[in-house]
Length: 289
Image (tube, rainbow, N blue to C red; front, side, top):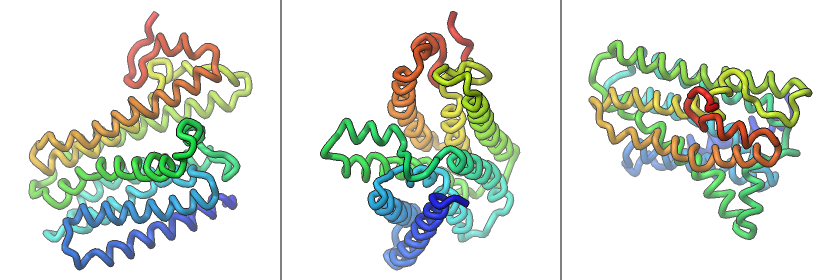
C-alpha cells in the first residue's frame, strides 16, 4: 500500500470515528433518525475537509463519495426496530457493495497521490480566487455530501417504513441497480484500455459505449442512484416525491460534472468538438451523422 493510501485510510478512520461519536452524542436529543445521519455525515465530512486543507489537496475527499454510503447503508438497515430483514439487506447490499468497491478501486488505481489535485477543483479555485476556502468547504466537500445523503434517503423508507413482503419487484430493482454499476464499470474499463495505448494520447475515445455517449460512466452512476430510489418507492407504496433525490443527482451531473469534463476535453483534444456534436452527452443513443 502506497503512502498516500495509508494517509487516506487514517483520515477516513478518524472520519468514521467522528461520525460514531456524534451519533452517540446526539442520541439523547430525540431527533429523527435521518437527522442523526445527516449530522454524523456532515461531521465526518468536516474531518476530511480539515485534512484536505492541511495537505492543500481536496482530492483527499474523492473516495468519500463511494466510502461513506456503505456505513450509512448498514446503519439504516440495522436500525429497523421491527426486526432485521436479511433478504432486504441482501438485495440492497449487493449493488451498494459492488458500487462502492468498484468506484473506490477505480480511484485507488488512478490517483497518483498528493502531488495531483482534481482539475475541477483547481478550476474552481482559479475562478473564485479569494473565496477558495468557501468553495472548498461548501462546493467541494459539503455539497456532494448533502447530495449523496439526499440520494440515500429512499433507503430509510425501504428499511424503516416498509411493511410489505419482499416481492419480485425488489429483485428487479436489485438487478437494475447492479446493471447500472456494471455499465459504469464497462465504461471505465474501456477508457482505461484506450488511455493505456500511448498512440491514443490527445485523441478522443469514441469506441465501445463511448461511441453512443460522451459519458456512459456517468449514466451508470446516475442510474445507480435511481435504482436506490426504486427501493424507496417500494417502501412508500409508490410515493413519487422520492424521485427528487436521484433527480438532484442527475442535475448535478448535467449542469456541473458533464460541462466541466466537456470543457476540459475541448481544450485538450482537437477532435472533441466534432465528437461532441455527434454524440449524446449522457444517454446511449446512436451517433449523429
